Image (spheres, one colour):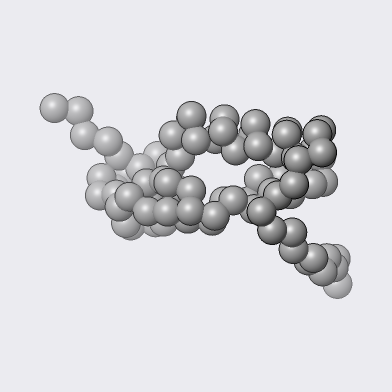
Length: 82
């Protein structure tokens, strides 16, 4: 049997979780809550299904290109590290 291993640390134990995912493209951001993923229990690396990431990209594109409203809009301060 072929055991799945983390590409970062080689550990083989994962936990299915729902996490917050930040999608960034061309200086714009979309924060998506409750995204399903598998998390390595050793190093914390996250693994997302390809279909999940495509769905997030499509939602970002819809918000950026069409008059579609998001569920919530946040105002976030941005500063350069000095």
